[in-house]
Image: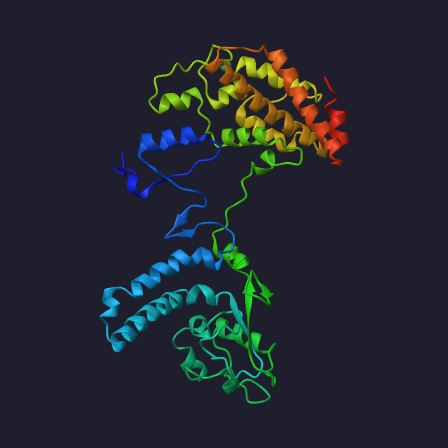
Length: 382
Ligand SMILES: [Zn+2]
C-alpha cells in the first residue's frame, strides 16, 4: 500500500441520476460535502470549453485578496513595485524557459535581413546557426557573433568564405536560394513543415505531444454500424477491465471461479470468448448466419482474424456487429446467472443476438443510412 488516504475535508461528492434521499444518505455516510459539476480547481471550472470572465472571477478575487492583505498594505510604494517586478519577472522567466520549445515552430522569412540575427534567429532550415555550425562558427566564417543577416549580404552576393565542412556546405547551398529584398523580415509559425498564418495551439500541442500510435484494435470497436453498449462492453474486455471471476479472485475476493456458462473451466475473458463450450456454440451460431462456418474461437485469434475476415465492407461491419453483440449478450447471460441464477440456452441466446443486429439494420434503414439496406440483406430477420 502507498499509504495515501483520501482527505475528506478536501473531497466533495458529485452525483447524477440518483434520488435526492439516496444522495443525502451517501453524503452523510461518508461525511462528504456535495458539489455540482463542473469540477473546479482554485474556484475555476476544469472544462474544455473556453472560460468566460465570470468563470475566472474566483481566481481574480483570490489574487486581489492576496494583493490587498495586510502584508502588501504594509509595503511602501517601492516595496509594492519590487513585489510586482518579482511576480512579473517570475512569469517572464517561465516563458523564457519555453523558448527552446517554441523556436522549433518559428521560421523567419528573410526580406531585407535587417531584423534577423545571423547566428541566433531561426531563418534557415537548420535552426540557430550557432548551434548548427558550433562555437567556432563565427571565427571560421568571419561573421561577428551579433551580426545581422543584412551584414553578410553585400548587395549582390553573400560575404562568406568557401565551405570547409559539410554543415557549412549545407548553409551555402541554402543561401543560394535566398536573395534579400527591400521588404522587412517576417516571422511565421511552422508546424510539421507547413507554414501557418496563425498560431493554432491545437496543431502545436499535437506536434509537441509524443505520438501515441493508434490502437490497432480501435477499428474493431468503432465502426459505422455500432451499437454503443455492445462496443463499450467489448472495449472493456479488450482492455481486460471487466470483473471476470479470475480477476475477482486475484483481487483477494473469496469467489468460486468456475465458469457460470459451462460449469467446467475457470472463468476468464479468454475462456468466455469463446473457449467456453457454451459461448462457442453461440459464436458458431451467429457466424453461421453470415455463412462463416469455421470461425476462430480463441480471443487473440478472433482479434487477428476480424480485420481480414471479409473484403466486403457491409459484411465486415456485420461481422463486427456479430462479434460485439455476442460478447455483450454472453456477458449479460453470465451476469444473469451470477445474480439471479436464471439461464437461457445457447440456441435461444444466438437467436436473440440475431434479432438485435437485425433490429439495428432496420433502424439504419429508417434513418436513411446507406449501410442499412446491405446490412438488412445480410441480417434477414430470423
Ligand atoms: Zn465456460
